[in-house]
Length: 115
Picture 1: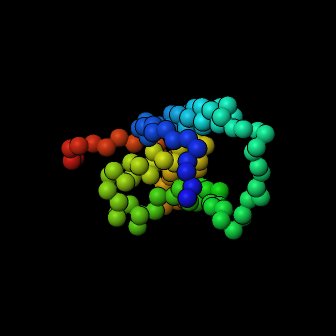
Picture 2 (picture 1 turned 90 degrees about the horizontal axis):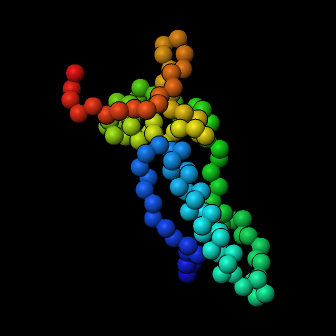
C-alpha cells in the first residue's frame, strides 16, 4: 500500500495562476520536509517501472476550443470552469467565428439573471 509522503489541503478558488502558486508553495514545503526527514544513509534508489507511469500529452490549442456542440450541452458553471481552468500557461479557452477568427475567453462571470 502506498502512503503519501506529504498531504496538504488548499483552495482551488481564484485564478489558475493563484492555484499554481499555492501548489508550488505546498510542493516546496513538502520537498523541504522530505529532505529533512529522509535518512540518506539507508535510503535506496529504485528504478521506475515505466509501465505504471501516468503520462498525459501536452495540451494543444485545438484542445481548448469551445465548439458549439459542446456549449449547447454545458451549464453556465461548466463553461465557467472550462474557461477558468484554461488560463496561461495552458492554451486558453477560445471560440472561432464563422470566418475562423479566434476569440480568447477570459474572466468569465456568471450572471444570475436572464436577459
